[in-house]
Image (cartoon, rainbow, N blue to C red; front, side, top):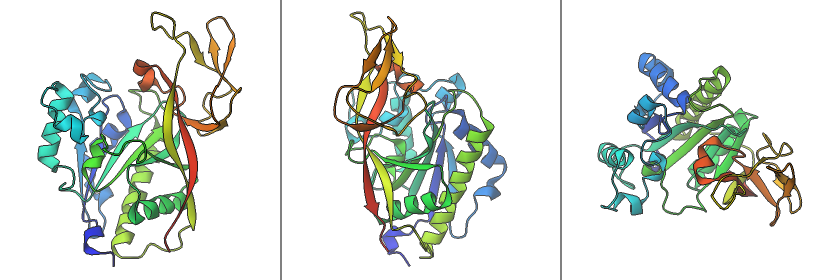
Length: 298
């Protein structure tokens, strides 16, 4: 059996942390009506809508991205206010603070407009999370594992309240849209994660691959803008919908307003969140990553 501190008894599944990512909201409403779908031996599984007001407005957020509100820095800043800041403090009171969360594992369901497949996002590296990723890679051929643990030490995600946590991010799908295929992928991935936890608690996770590939986030590339801050180039067709490809200096990444091609300048890198609609408010065109191999403990 796993050590006592590693046994997972209580799980929280969250949807609607971003109010216009409708897949998670749809599934939470489904599980409210059909809780038996989430039942696993030895597990207590609860569900939650993260940002109900943003869901009602069909907007990502109203004042501040809720999924950027759970770092210690933000939570301790008394000068901050707004709907999402208030909601973050409500959730900390309800779920417990970092390190003392009432849940052993939080799974947060998201979608993306980028072609990310079934993207599982890590904020932590340890045996539990690595074996969970290896299990999911074995179950599905559409899983891509990314890590934000290196980029953000004091994590601001809602799920980071729990000592074990994961974001499930499936795309592409437009904001505010329900897509049958994306819903099914998200739902099945959630059930597979619960299956893993049940096996983990029984020390029955077997025959995992010896290693897995993980993409670690390293930075962001912004759109070209004019002196007034207006975007003056779009993502070039050569990289559109090709998340997790590698690019090098000289590869074309933008088409500008004068129908000219703009090449990438910088070190070779992998890219993701290509043309993500949610990042236009920050002029972010895509994110950069490096690929590493993680050995899975036997």
